[in-house]
Image 1 (tube, one colour):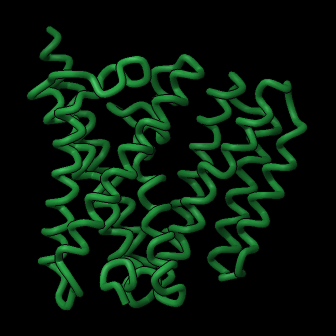
Image 2 (image 1 turned 90 degrees about the vertical axis):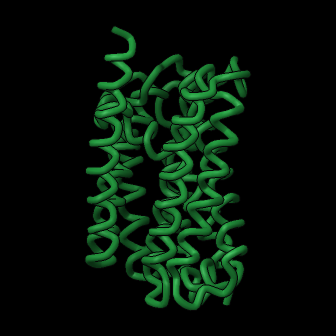
Length: 276
């Protein structure tokens, strides 16, 4: 019976991940506005999940502030208003800080940055006409490869647990499998890119983003352990909530954008993949 349940859960994971991934890729390719709109919807759902965990309520004034702050930051990011999105995120977190019981104020404010910063950086990265779409697609491929093979190798080989008190289901074999998969995915992506500056650079970047995804997964595990919940919600069949499904992507896209902007602020997408 346990194997049957595991198989059913795996099928749900595959179907829901494929549906969400297909929607993301379509919106990413179609237009920057459609991509930003998708980010606004996903971010609003994650803000709701964050509030359910931190404050134990479905809807309240703080959720409205949280969601509107991130959506406004995304809107100003589309308009390329330099630094204003981050000013909005800071203002929103300050506005949230005095609201509600003292024990929830800091984490309520932190949720604005946890969800809002990756969303704004993703919008900016997409705006690079010279490589923004490819850069985000690269991050999606690497994180998907990491998550899939980490789970598969962990279940197949088992072995010592990575951090039993924090995430009892993660094993060292899963960590190795996921990181190797992100490295290989990066290398394959490099081979598919005509004119890539260096396949070893992109493969190494894949490994680095896979590690960022692992860290994001552990951060989310710590968050759920702190609030004694198994899943952030049930909106994604087989995965739980969007915070559960996108935890690694939030950290990976943040790191990818930082690297791209550090190399070339004018063309961060191209810089990330072609190092120029």
